[in-house]
Amino acid sequence: GMRKKEVNVICVGLDNSGKTTIINKLKPQNAQQSDIVPTIGFTVEKFAAASLSFTVFDMSGQGRYRNLWEHYYKDAQAIIFVIDSSDKLRMVVAKDELEQLLNNQDILSKRIPILFYANKMDMQESLSAVKVSQMMGLEAIKDKPWHICASNAISGEGLDEGVEWVTDQIR
Ligand code: GTP
Ligand code: MG
Image: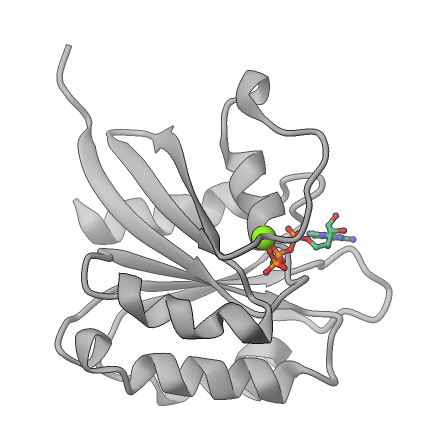
């Protein structure tokens, strides 16, 4: 059959936002890990969707590893930025990390699509995707296509919508 088009994606966001849980859930069931631990540095994961074969750099969100993110911007064709919708206290930290990302030379120079997952929508205290979008200042992103969806990485709710959006942006 036809070879699927290869796409490089970088997945970033604060520690504990749910990046690894999301990527794990996007893999075929028999390839999914049952126990997710905090990422050290980064891992490289693969999954397929529609006509595309995704290679995802799942970065650690811990402060001491965030300086690694920028080294993988150059080769990325899409960004997945995960936000913990229930973590209001650290939303300003997430916003600051997003601003640094958007100001990076390798990001400034291309019209790369950015998918935001407003994750942990199942938590009692979680904010809506609209509210997360406001707190993160997403309306200010004018030079790149972006999209936000509410997600629950445990059940998988909302994840496919995001991947479909990325797929549409790339092909
Ligand atoms: P780092 O690797 O440290 O950057 O963290 P991460 O962003 O990869 O987070 P990870 O996927 O390890 O998830 C952190 C915790 O949040 C785990 O206990 C997950 O089970 C939990 N979690 C992830 N997504 C959700 C969600 O949608 N809802 C709920 N309730 N918990 C979630
Ligand atoms: Mg992780």
